[in-house]
Image (cartoon, rainbow, N blue to C red; front, side, top):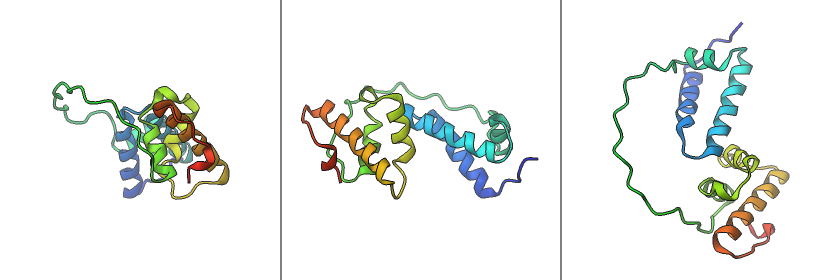
Length: 143
């Protein structure tokens, strides 16, 4: 039997569903997994979860977007924190494996990381930094 949803549940599911259109593959994968967990917790399928939250695909017709102007390539800058670095790393998916993209998309908003998550995040930052700048940095150099 599906659990009743609170208004907060509906807002959270709606916000997560909106992120499925992200240009960052890692973020889309992480959001999909969060939605799948929420559906499983409520004994619902993904379509049932989204429909229950009002995300039934019958929204108003979207306005056509103007053709995007080509912008500059994203630039890597030394991050101020591991979370900032993981968020930046999502802009450089060409340097990361699918697993690393999912990991970065899943943990970059967390307030704290386990020691193992911190080690993985440091390794990802070193990898992207080296690929973008040509400068080798030890994973331990990332605070």
